[in-house]
Length: 461
Image (cartoon, rainbow, N blue to C red; front, top):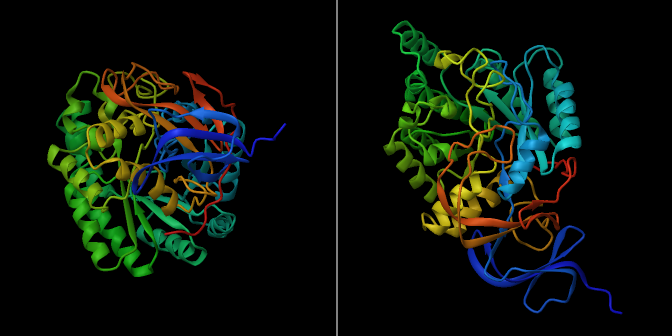
């Protein structure tokens, strides 16, 4: 009896990439893509992809998992529940945060998060190291962690417990530059937010809808400009997280024209929500920072995606339940500045974008693959992820482009609500493979907690 040449062969599908569509089959051996073409030899397992589009598994490089926020509120999701939800939405790789708080050692924090992920994560995963304390041995810890393959750092310019002063940011950038890491930044001006918040509270404007005015657009613009100038000074690669404004895109465009090594992303909630969503009776569900902006900003973000000025779309998954453990830790009548910020998004990112970009034709399939898989893998140095190519991990999603479905009230995470519940989408992730193993099929999850692997980041650009 002839031994099959491959572990798995996916046949009769249309393969999608950042350059478009092509007919072909995919052969998988030892978790990697071993061959592409037509008429490939047999596999021990054969998957018929007739009528489906085969795309790379999603790479979500901005999600908060099993993390204590700077305001002292614990995420609703564990690594098990968050990554379970990610797989259901077609995302096979996540990059979440190892969140240092003042007084903690970076190395100790990173090891604690790695242990949590090792027992719970179902996606392959890496970490951004949040730097909130540069004192003592922390910069030595940071250098050691970077050299060990943790090549992404997150800094904040606002929030009491995590924000860094400019001098500390420069110190962090110098270490990152020397050791080959990317610095990501939440860029908002802290003083502007404090002043606006105090004024609103004094005026009795405390509802969720007032949150949008507590984070003035100028707070984002000033901080993006300042961070670009610090990048220009140091030559350090920079990623601006969650760009929400038209002018923010313009600042990034101008910085790149000067040769500043700056990347930028936006998030699904800025592409599909505007600030008027905060006017709803359940507006607390949708609070996030920066807040949603106006239609002119949303249009500008879509245009920037089409021009590669925004290079990727992430979920900024920040899960808090609508109860006393999460959004209402300070009571159901708490003012907006006491309501936990964030929305669930890991499971929703790809379905929402597939419907908009592929089914409805806004920017197209090639750009969908680029901003959800290929670009994040490239920018963050996840060299085995993000593309259908020989030698890459066999992280694959078989999309049914004709299947319509209505988003449910709750998802597969531990949040208990869905900010896009009731929306009808066209295009569905029917089958998901992670390193050649079928983890979602026929409406059943087959992955086990802890089956995801930690990923070393390479120096990339």
